[in-house]
Image (cartoon, rainbow, N blue to C red; front, side, top):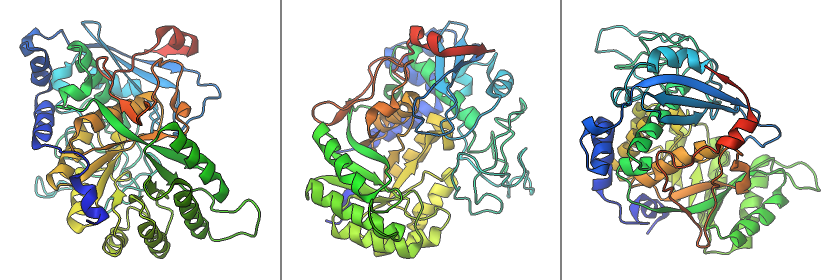
Length: 472
C-alpha cells in the first residue's frame, strides 16, 4: 500500500457521523450547545454581547513562535457575564481590533453571529450575481496578509488577500480587507472576524460547560503528537534535536530545515544541505519512526523533486509545502512524480481555492491555519470539504497556547485529523497567563481539554501582573 493510500484514512476508523455533527453545529450552534446538555436553546444564558476589550500584556523576552504576536488578548463579554478570549497577532497584525469589534459585535447575540460571521466560502468573485466585481476596502491585492503567499488564481489575489484595515464599517465584516467581494459577509483572511469567531465559540462552550470540540461533534479524547522542529541553523543540529524528541516520547518528528550549511566547510546549495539533514535524521531514529519534511515553500520544482525522491527512498511520511502554493502546476507535477503525500494549504485563504487544489490533484492532505480561513467556523468547513473527498485535514499548531488550543479543538472535532503538531521544544508555547501546559503523556499523546470553551482558562493573577493596560 503506497504512502498516499495510507495517508487517506487508515490511521483510525473515522465516521461520516462526525462530519455531520460538525455541519449541524455550524448551521445552528445554539441548538448544538443546548442538545449537549439536554436543554432547549431558550434555556441558554443571555448571550448578548455587552462589552469588548483588549488586555495589553508585556511578553518581555518570551520567544514568539509567530513574529507578529503582540501580547494582546481579546475579551468578549456577554450580559450573563461569560467571557470569551483569543490572542491577536497570531498570523498578521490586527491593529485597532476594538474599532472593528464595537459596531460588529456589541449588542448582538452570539447565537445570531456565529452562523454568519465567518461562514462564507472566503474569497469569491461576484460574477453571476450582480454582474460586477466589487472591491474590498483595501483594493485588489492590497498587500500581504499573514506573511504568506495566498493561492488566489484570480486577478489581484495571488500574493495574499490584502491588508486587513482597521476601519471596518458595521455593514461589512472586516471591510478593510482587500480582494474580491463575497456572496455574504467579507473576505478571508480577516484576522478581525476570525479572532471574534474563536471568542464566540469559547463563550458558547462556557455557557453549557462543554469544551468546544464536543459541541462540534468530536469524540476523541487525545491526539498522537509529533515534534515540529525550529528552523535550526546547521545540518548537524538536527540529529541531537530529533534524538531528544524521540527520548521524550514523541511518535514522530518534522524537519523545518534551516540554512542547510555544515558547521565547518565551504558553502553548499541549501537544498543539498537539507538532503543531508534528511539522511542523518533517518539514520539517527531508525526505520520505524515517523518523519516528515516541511521547507515552507522554499524550493523550486527541480529542488523539490530531488528532495522528494530522497524522502520517498527513506520512507518519510509526508512532504509539506515544498514549493510556492501559488504554483499549482508545479504541485500537480510533484504529486504525480512522488509517492509520499503532499500536505498543502497553510497559504490558501478560501474554500474555493481548496476545492480547486483538490480537483487538480495538487495536494493529498489539506493543511489549514484557522486565522486565515475564518476561525473555528471557517476551518470546520475546510475540514469537512477535505473529508468529502476522503482526504485528511491537518490544522497547523504553531504559536502561543490559545493558537494551539484552537487548532487542537479542530483536530479533536474533525474525523479526518490524526496528528497533533507540537512545537519543539514545547516550552516555547508557554505563556504565564495560561497555567495549563501543552505536553505529551508517557505514550506520546496530548490529552483533550476537559474544561469548557477553549479549555485553557486564564490565570487571572498572572494576567494582572503582565497587563500594562486594558483598552475598552
